[in-house]
Amino acid sequence: MAEQEISKHTLNALKTIANKENDIWHKLREVALEIFIIVFAVTLSIWMHEQGEHRHEQQQVKSFLIGLKADIQSDIADMNDNIQSYQEDDAIYSYLANLGPATTLDKVKFEDAYAHATVGFNRFFIPHNSRYEGFKSSGKLTSIEDDKLLQHIVSLHEEAMPVIHNSESGWIYNQNSLIHYLDVALDAPEGSDLPFKLITAPKGKRLSKSMIASPQLYERYHTYIELGTQIIKEIELAYPDSAVKQVAVKS
Image 1 (cartoon, rainbow, N blue to C red):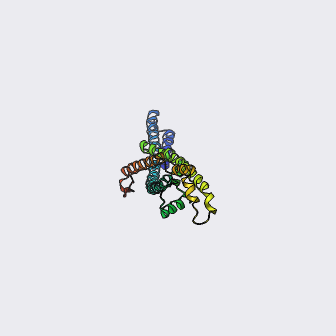
Image 2 (cartoon, rainbow, N blue to C red):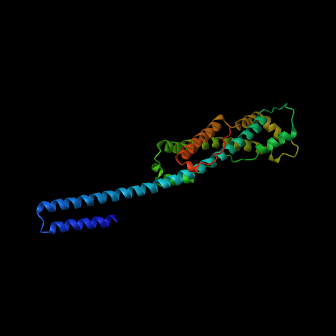
Image 3 (cartoon, rainbow, N blue to C red):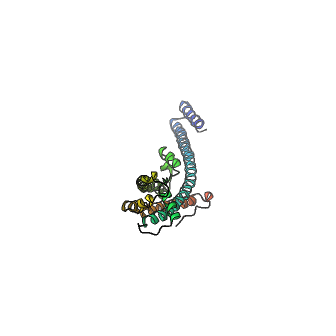
């Protein structure tokens, strides 16, 4: 439509110039008017195009943020499960670390705890971050107009998440060290006291104690949960219609 208007007024200007019946001043006024109309039409067309692109861009941002909120809620739920698992592990390894050669043994409790210690558990937090990575790689993160929200989202994925994996890697390393140490008892006959001797030896006590999750790990989990919860609130403030019941945060 804008192209047609431009063509129309360009033709009018050319006709005015070619019209020999009008004097030069009349022609200049008419041509100036046509030029003004053309410039206005072009400017309006550009503005409308930019507005259309902006609306489309912000619709993409809305879809991304609403999806991101669901991803973070899933992450928080998974992280709360991990925290509970680590706390249960802490109780088991604390029990083993506090055993001594002269301890009166609860055989069933010890065997259950020892069996737990010999099994490798994957406690890695696996984030739902493919949506974030895709939006980032497409260069669209800067389309988020709320600078505070953008900063929080980037901090969550680029700062809070990697340090969690660092702490988890340390726990997995300690777990593998303990399992390798206890492998000596794999060929021990049934009823042997070798497992108890290994656990109550200085090295066994040290390795068992190292399996108690560090305060740093819990702190990093809670930092992620708190920041993720803040992001959810900010998204719901921007898009009230997206508000749903949030995942409860464990203390």
